Image (cartoon, rainbow, N blue to C red; front, side, top):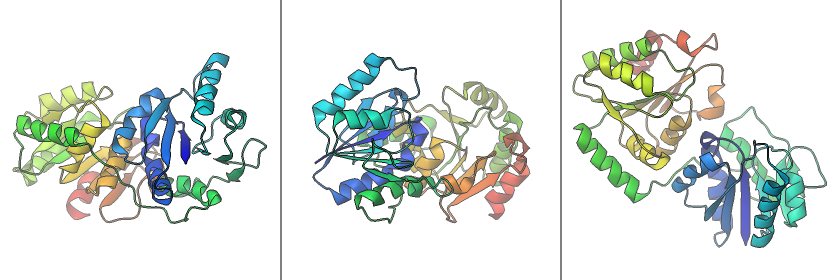
Length: 309
């Protein structure tokens, strides 16, 4: 059996689909499962054991007829038995119909182009919302826990990175800001300084990426003892999260990796609903801005959760 899942969206939008892919593999253990994703999101699937291969397609782009024809050719050539459109995307239903895929499931109203449809319930935990689609093809409605598989090469990299930072063999607090605009530097500094005063032997490690380079530089100058790591891909980021005692972050892919790894997490939210991102658990604590503005979450609010939560 050959299955293709089409998952429009960013790299952070891929991780919540993992339980559905894992359940498909559990239900059809001999199936080959491919995914069609944005080019920038393909790296998420180095953390999935359920997926055989990835196919790049820019769902949100201004695709030419040739782009659609190329994807149609790929779908036809691989003779998929089942296709699942995990997030709404214009034109994909028609494409699957033209490809002749026998079972075509997607969210939304009944359509000529889909054999199975289901309304999308956006007011629930995201992995459970996506997993609902599997019920229309006969899979159990019970959504598995979010889980990832970190490649050994990424775990080895993280071991070397911890030695480079001088924290090999001990725990640490990992901090990451993937929001735009980010949480203010002065707030991060106040939180870090409080950690250093109360837990002087516990290293603080900042995750630097392309979006927060300036913030990382500012914090490094203000906090000489702050360690900085720059994972080059999602597997290496996951490996660093796996070794942390606590992840303190803004909403994004890091919090999803921490949930999958069962690492204690404090996540800062602006206007989003934390229940869509974080399952109920004492390990995963949301801190939400009442105003919808991330900068209005004071360091004191965060620290109260850290020491008293």
